[in-house]
Length: 104
Image (cartoon, rainbow, N blue to C red):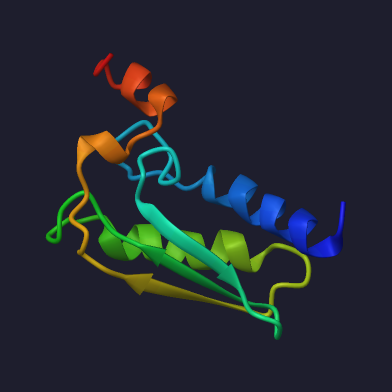
């Protein structure tokens, strides 16, 4: 496996350790991560949303992502771009998340 794919896999692993404190499912499986881009200068750009624009845990989640993804070997910086379009819905969750939360 090439270095880029290994780094991308590590980033995904770290995102799966970030949780909204009010929901027992990680942000990746919740469908909050819209995009991950690893720039040539080893800066990771993450585009994401929250379950609601007024989510009280938003700052905590963003900072947790910055710290955990930033701990991946070789990552120099992490930029988290918070967007609210498209608006998040339960349909964006993985099957595992829906099962965990009782939606299946």
